[in-house]
Amino acid sequence: MTESRLLARLRTAGGPPPAPSARAALLAGLGGFSATLTMFSLADWSGAAFIMAPFGASCVLAFALPDSPLSQPRNIVGGHLIAAAIGLGMMSLFGTSAAIMALAVGLAIAAMLVTRTTHAPAGANPLLVMLAGADWSFLVTPVLAGATTLVAVALLYHRCTGRRDYPRYWL
Image (cartoon, rainbow, N blue to C red; front, side, top):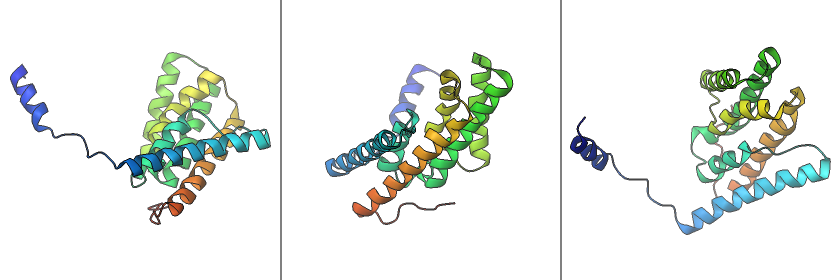
């Protein structure tokens, strides 16, 4: 493709989506703040892990893009559980290497697609599991505990901000 055709294609590809209102952006940020603070507070109170880095990206989806299929409870909880379990299983069976970590990410993506639990932030879970040397308890805390807390805060947040249609579906 010539440079001029490429430039023409880029110009006709459309622009970015419209910017949200300042209110919507601030409310989404408040939702992410609330969920993250809740997970840290529960961790401090209980002594159990409730937070991991991919939950920050999950907050973007749950609070800024609540209509996305990737933002639904099934996807947040299921995606994180499936991807973390694949990371743990691969590490248990084959150890940790670049090839095994890459394979685990690929398998997690495929498994989330097949089970209709695709959640982009969960794609990081196999890497996190293997780089941290996590054990199987990682599935309960922080994965299950944190993901269900995040969904509970998202549900409450959307009710308080007038979005009674979240979630679009549960299962």
